[in-house]
Amino acid sequence: RTDLFGYFPPVDSSESEQQPLAFIHGSCEATARLVGVSGAPDGGDFGSFWVSIFPDAASQFTLCPPNSTIGALSLRAASWTAGYTRSYTTRADGGTFGEMLPFFPGGGYPVQHFAGIEVNERQRVNIGLHNATSDRDGRYRLILFARNGAVTAEVIITVAPNQTRQDTLASLFRMEIPDGTYGLTVSPLDSVGYPGRSWAYVSLVDNISGDPTNLW
Image (cartoon, rainbow, N blue to C red; front, side, top):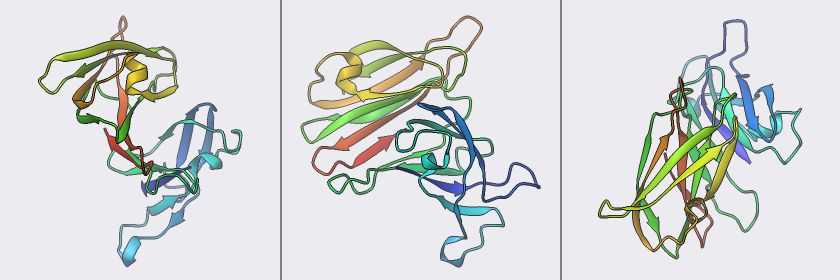
């Protein structure tokens, strides 16, 4: 499940600060006003619009199938510093803390670089790609660099509009990746008259505990 944490002012003065207008894109397309638990932590004063936790955010999209909604969550009023989401398993044999990601800017990034990607028998590496545009495929050039800066592999990945793809590093590059330290560049390929944008992250998952560490 995914919980939403943050500081979200209302869309306008007539709307409740406890119900930010949110959208989900992916396996279901829907809009909802998320209901959360309000109050400043430790008795602090964070202003009248502080809301700390919106639990199980995906389940609040009542028009989507229960327990099977996967995709991207966007807010009408937020910024990349306003909050973050925490996705985690509820299985007894799963990890303990889950993945934590901040908000990406609505316009994405022109290019993203990730350093310190460790490939070894203790962890697996997943790459997440999202295409936040609603009317065109997103095409991304992924370049994997060895520790000495040499190009190890390169591939072009296409993601459909409003879709999210997460896969292992080896699956995306369609090859076995030797143990070692790597860097990754995700570069959107521009289409005619449109500058490409990137919404990508790296997830390093411990094979023993199931706990991930995110790079973004």
